[in-house]
Structures are given as C-alpha cells and as structure tokens.
Image 1 (cartoon, protein in one colour):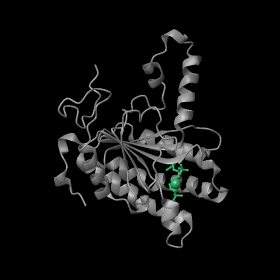
Image 2 (image 1 turned 90 degrees about the horizontal axis):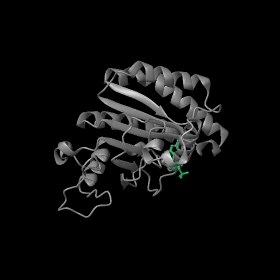
Image 3 (image 1 turned 45 degrees about the vertical axis):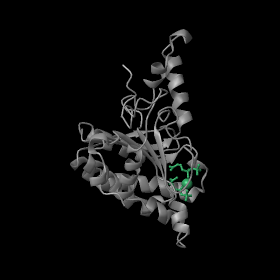
Length: 253
Ligand code: IPE
Ligand code: IPE
Ligand code: MG
C-alpha cells in the first residue's frame, strides 16, 4: 500500500472524482442485505475525505445517486434517500470544522424529498465560505441530464446558434466553478462512467480498481494518485519529453 512518502505532493491532482461502486456486492458476498453495503460505504467515504484533506486535494466529487438509480427496488431507493439525509445531519458539522465547502450537483426534481433538498441547502450555506477543500456530492445526478439542463439554459437565455461555444455550455453546468476532474476513480471492477460527469471527464485520467467501495481507504486513494502521477497527460498534443506529465491543467490560455 502506498504511503504519502511515495507521492509527489507537488503534483497531487487538484480535483478527484469517485464513482463509489460495489456496495451491494460487498454486502451480498457477506450474506448481508445490499443496504448494509451502503452503510459500510460511509467509513470509506470519510476516510477518503480525510486522506484527501491531508495531502491538499482541493476538489473531491463523489457519485452518491444517479438519475438511473431510481430504477432500483423502492426499498433500496428509500434507504438511500434517508441514508443521505442522515449522513448530512451527522457529518456536516465535522466537515465544516475541517474547512470543507460542501456542494451538490444534480437535478432538483420532485422525486428528491423536500427535507433532503433542505438539508443540502443548509449544508451548502453553512460551509459556503470554507476554502480548504470543496466536497461535491452528485445526487440525482446524470451527465446527460446536466448537458440537457445546460442547453435549456442556453435556449432560455436567447443565445443564437452561431454564438454557442464550449464555454457557453460549460458556464451553464450545475457548478460552473468546478474545475474538470484530473482523476476519476471507479471501484469494484466496472469499467464505465455510468453517466458521471460526461462533459467534465473529457480529459480526466481514469483509474479502476477491483476493491469494493466499502473496503476503499485513503491508502487506496494514494495508490490511485501514484498511478495518476505515472500518466502523461497530452491533451491532444505530441509528447514533449513528459513535459505534460500529470500536469493539472491543459496548458491553454
Ligand atoms: C454504489 O454501489 C452505490 C450506489 C449506486 C448508490 P452499488 O449499490 O451500485 O453496488 P453494486 O454495484 O450493486 O455492488
Ligand atoms: C453508478 O453506479 C452510480 C453511483 C455510484 C451512485 P451504478 O452501480 O448505478 O452503475 P451501473 O448500473 O453499474 O452502471
Ligand atoms: Mg453498482
């Protein structure tokens, strides 16, 4: 397992996005109901948050509930809604004390309970001035829905077709301030994005691990970052003796 000493702390990705996957299988392999896997995922999440804070990650974004997850059995959906409320209530103060700014991305549609929306707003408001790290929770989030919503906003603004550029869209994503992820991690052996950050992941480095989310800890995060630091990010260019190696911007501008 990688310890921080093996990481180049000058080249820590500034934005890491995680698809926290494999909770259900983790539980089922232990003869437990799937919901116990979600419960066990909380410890993983907060260990990763602490690990990210310790090495100066500025943005951490996690996929908590997708626009497709409504297709799950009603009891599991209900559990996830209540569990997310519960986590927000129990954990927001400690996140606030750590200097974490909490934000949410996703659709605020009628399926999301008002109480949960209220808790999201409270956590956002409580932590809005924090600057140590921005912790974004993707809830009722879909990458396609996000792009559709951005396009609707462009149309609503009356912008003509010939004036639309990439930044016209980017400025209307759920959080226009969120930088593109440098690194996307998915646990539990699935090699897909499942509609996570479709626009934003265009040039992110992707890292996949067989470890199920409930077993994932900061050491696994550091292992992913170590792998990231071996990558050469070219952004379409030709290799320049590794000059773009795991740099955190695309060098434009
Ligand atoms: C990820 O774990 C958590 C959510 C999607 C909410 P899963 O529940 O997808 O677990 P698996 O992939 O079925 O094992
Ligand atoms: C993606 O995982 C969504 C979250 C982790 C919240 P899923 O488990 O829903 O994705 P699929 O269905 O395996 O693609
Ligand atoms: Mg899954």
